Length: 552
Image 1 (cartoon, rainbow, N blue to C red):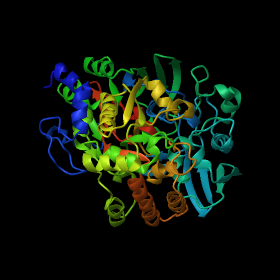
Image 2 (cartoon, rainbow, N blue to C red; image 1 turned 180 degrees about the vertical axis):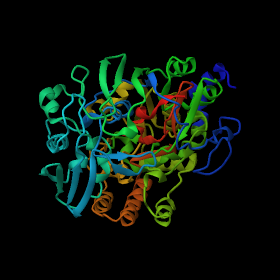
Image 3 (cartoon, rainbow, N blue to C red; image 1 turned 90 degrees about the vertical axis):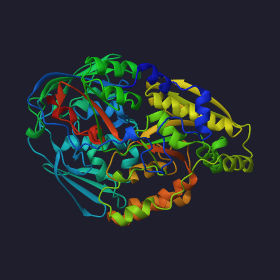
Image 4 (cartoon, helix red, strand yellow; image 1 turned 60 degrees about the horizontal axis):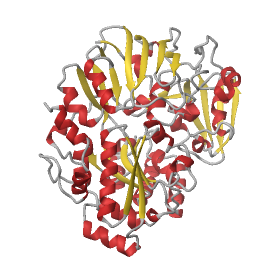
């Protein structure tokens, strides 16, 4: 069992120690020289769990910790872990994203693609909103149309960029027509772009919709009982939920906002909090040994990467981006930042996100990618060839997890070793979240870390955002060859043909590094000793996971 003293030393590395990491030394005992895709620390051998034990019965209340307050519960602005893990229990989408990352019917009991440019949704009858009114086709039209309304400013507008019309075409039927074949539109109907709200509520609340004062009125297994800004959100069981299989077992769920990772872990160990997603990796071993619950590891689609937030500065030259990755010992970073609970990767997607793709197509997509192994002399040559020595680099981090700070420090040390002039900044979790939605917040920032998950069962959810001008193309990277191949993939309906084209785009990003891929982590969740009944998959961002939790 690790002591807190040892844990603190690993959670707060000195710049000198991180410099050693950037210089290629293995920081921790037991670190092997295994290649990319292999676990690098024996204690990190973890088992992916499909589901925890079934509950013995209902439970009065569950307390759940999240690392930041949701920025909004407006589904058009739900774009991060805090927002989505709450909203997933309150609002339903047309489709459901299941724990095996497949899609199945949700509020749309049937859907079809009768022509290359139409998607038809048959809406489930008898569904109730939390205010007691009944779901109708007009509610679906109003909900989806908000994504194409510039006054709303949907963060998911790119999903709808090829949509020509959204119309009611039957008593309980809605047809979406696109300007060209779009394989991706339907895959997002299991996430925020497919969320359905009452048309009357949207009209009544207007610009206040989804904020603490107005809240939301959806069809999920829980309704929003209260939202106390800065403190927490409470959900209560909705007794008229349409799906008996997901009727909530808990009478209420209380979300508490705990931005400090140490405070979050202490609350879990003490039993003050029953559960939490995204367990800080430096706390996994001590939590497992505490006897107060258990950490579960589930399927994930997230890759931890360093986003290049500015391609007009020194990082606009791909040689500088390549040099930074080659000046960093990513195997050592996995040990220092994630305590070994991760694997190095050279791609911006996980294989798990390529759902339904044949094994040979999938293998080709990941074979032959450049590995960018640690090679400081070669990295320095790239910097010299680019004439980048002495140029400034601004790196931003937050205290969301200890690993995030360690990653920023490692990049700072790597930049220094290359003769660049790094500046490290630390911001609060809420300000860090704004980097992903507010261009003004990113001004002057060259690098920041992301654990980027896909929101659909297709890798184009990742690569689509790197097209020229996309909302999430944070550094304004532009590559015509990449745009052409990804746009062609989006128009390809056959899953394997589409994957082959996507693989071409993946190889371009592996060469050009608009984002710097670091490592994959499993999805983690802590379940205290009072509760059980959860699938620890990344689908928790869009699936009513809290409804499955009950008494142990």
